[in-house]
Image (tube, rainbow, N blue to C red):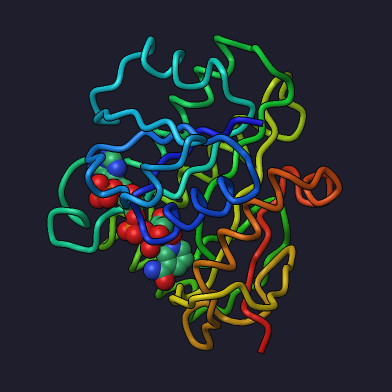
Length: 240
Ligand SMILES: NC(=O)c1ccc[n+]([C@@H]2O[C@H](COP(=O)([O-])OP(=O)(O)OC[C@H]3O[C@@H](n4cnc5c(N)ncnc54)[C@H](OP(=O)(O)O)[C@@H]3O)[C@@H](O)[C@H]2O)c1
């Protein structure tokens, strides 16, 4: 199964690339700066690197990217700089998910096409009755207004949840929701939940990026796990 990877130069995306390649799963990585892919990864025969700017990619670019892939993972995220947070593109993740989905609809070479979105536990799954305190609602509302990347993450997941939905003819999706991301060398035990089990604002948990990468790669390679979480927004925490 070949996976199209967006955000593969990022802290989590690079771990996803590595874990897919270790399992012998080919990867097509669309990056804006190939020199940000480590030499070790660039030397791997299973990795195809395409240099492109997502904001100027055409329909035909997207068609060719998805044409020989069975799955896609987005680990895109706004860079944590003033320009990354408040500059353009403000809808980096949402626009990429929409363009990707539309290309899959146009191409329709494999069904179902698996789409995994790296999202955030700060986003609620409105398909479920996720209880959030009034105080948390207020804080998240403020973040949504003041920090565009949060709204982008919410909109990207909403596109999958509402527009692609649960019975799309060619796309199945999972939106993975980590809590505060940490860096660790090795995969450790983690727990998965349909909804948050703690407050993302007032009692946040930790999720190491390597565990997020591991779960995403498991979703791609383990059909039973995929069937367990398809159309859902699993929350992932490191096991305490
Ligand atoms: N921080 C947290 O605690 C936390 C918690 C939960 C969820 N999340 C979410 O997790 C996701 C990924 O996190 P991360 O730490 O792995 O991200 P990261 O290291 O910042 O990686 C972001 C990736 O997006 C790419 N990117 C950024 N702006 C781009 C643009 N304009 N065009 C094309 N590509 C662009 C980056 O490419 P370049 O290498 O070229 O810049 C990089 O590959 C984010 O959506 C974030 O919101 C974060």
